Length: 423
Image (cartoon, rainbow, N blue to C red):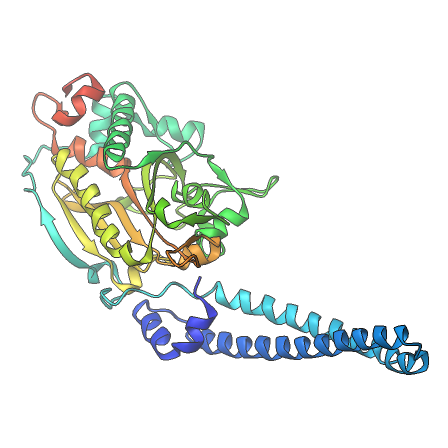
């Protein structure tokens, strides 16, 4: 969430950056500034009346102690007026603050100055491309046919049990999933991340803290009886570990990783591009999260990007890194890198990770602060990234590594799978 003082003092800059993000309600900026002015005026009036009432109360006490009851009673006659004014102004202030909060949460985070202008994914900036795209024979199969051929994933059985988008992994398919999760967690530990095991349901305060609410409630599964949400990513519970926390400067950076299933309604997703593992309602993911000093957050973002790239390199998957344009970024991100792997059978790029810097957008909502060297508290920066999401990794591993014999398992995974081939 943006801070009101920053909006008020940097109106033109805020409007300029929101335009880069293709924000459709720029008038909200002036509405926020106007409400903030009303809030400050009302607060000043309330403080003035309260100060007058307190001074009168003190004066009444002094008069009563000196036996000047008549003078004290004359001042007391005004006490009801002060009480009424204080209540009226207090109610006005609460109403203005509520409306101001409702407007503020509708404003997305401002994109970093390096974010390119654009609206569609086609306008994202390719930062780099690594690896050689494999050339497969005309007889090569897409991963959903390979999964059926080798009895790895049963999509229809998932439909029977739950519905479309909830696959059942079987045999070596299940073991490959488990191997990837263990590999990603081990690599995160080597990079200094501390593992946590997390709840899969969160409350409204947690969803608000990381920006899923009120922006993405339509994409989340809601458990109405208990007013809880199934997590769309481990980012939500991990980051909320530090809600309402003041960290010490020497505790930064905080580095956590966690494996969870993730649940997304993906409403409105149809067509051939979502076949098989390309888009699911339930999938597994290892997430990395950092809470850092603002001075180092963009250096940390590059480090997190490098970590994700190292996983793709070790899996021997060709990939590219994109800097997302303003119109393709998430509501809360200031800068996002997407990592995509090349699907040789589908002949297209598949997104497998997003790594983002949220600056103070989440920490403002979370009241996540640290005490700096001067002993003052200030907002921390939060960052997170997929390291990695499994479905499209599995899809590209199956497709790119298919041979006449079967599917070759990357060498780095063999200690985890305990087999070298799927055949």
